[in-house]
Length: 83
Image (cartoon, rainbow, N blue to C red; front, side, top):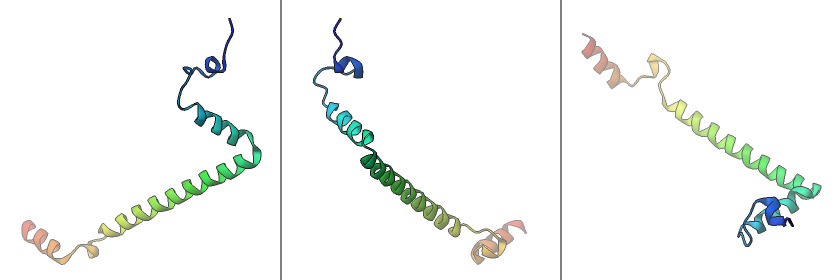
């Protein structure tokens, strides 16, 4: 039996994303293009980590951590309730 490239890739003939597979292979098989691609991925991951960290830090800053940080109206309400 004669196998085609479609068979090797387990794709139906005329698959619209064959072009994407070809481009991915072209980038990843070329050491220079792969290095640039990997660096771009690393920058994107670093940026995403920084954005998430900033968001989490901002949320943490909004939460009271000590009794001194609790707003006065809340302390008054809790004191009245506890009495």
